[in-house]
Length: 159
Image 1 (cartoon, helix red, strand yellow):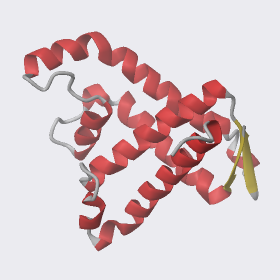
Image 2 (cartoon, one colour; image 1 turned 180 degrees about the vertical axis):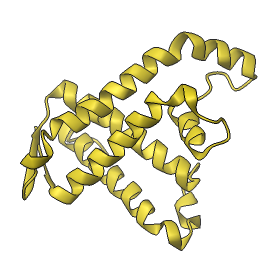
Image 3 (cartoon, one colour; image 1 turned 135 degrees about the vertical axis):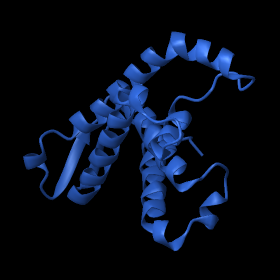
Image 4 (spheres, one colour; image 1 turned 120 degrees about the vertical axis):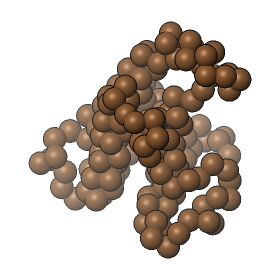
């Protein structure tokens, strides 16, 4: 499959994927009360929700591999665009099945990170976003559009 993006769209996707990559790479050094920590809670959610001890035990055994996979998905998204000096006009990216899956997972991580920053937890929360955050909300919606477009290209019966 071939996907086409304008240079500005590539800049946005690469910046967002790089931000998620950095967030995950620095996960063990974050202040638990920081906004970045809230995003990490979305990216690496509690498994049980019944207490910190069980969740800590689960994370001890699973988070390293999960973080590595999420970091790699973000890297694959960025790498698909090639070098920055190659981004002129319309940028085309060829995605095979494995790359498409990595992109879908990375786009989900990007949306989860943006949603955490905006305070979106449920459908409809978008209506409560302050005017100051409208641009970020538009980016959130656009990333969802890219994700849905990729899903539709992979599965024409997707609805």
